[in-house]
Length: 154
Image 1 (cartoon, rainbow, N blue to C red):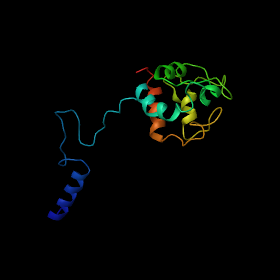
Image 2: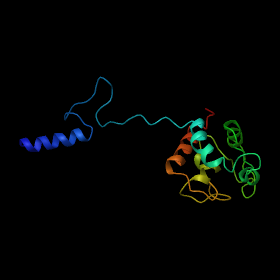
Image 3: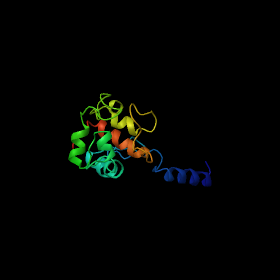
């Protein structure tokens, strides 16, 4: 390789986050371009404060919010939301007896996830948030992450 070509290749390698060709970070246990640790699963506090409190509570709140009346699901507080979601059978118009709101470790079996999932139709009732803009994929993924981690109350 000639001088200019080598400078170009070295620049590309550095721009891609690599160091000198053939070098690795043996002392730290990581190598350039190697796998990284997966992100930590979402917590219920994160799900509640960033999604439920903002996108769900306008309807699923007491007294008499439409989501409390029709869906029989009160998410007014973080404690109420957790108690009314995890291992709780569906209730309300259109969804009574269809499944479980949150099945720890199983997003695909959780009605909450199914109702916000952007791909599949809702298993009962309507997609959530009712009449609102669908959740962003990152929000859906956060809910799935929390459920996949066993839906802990943290």
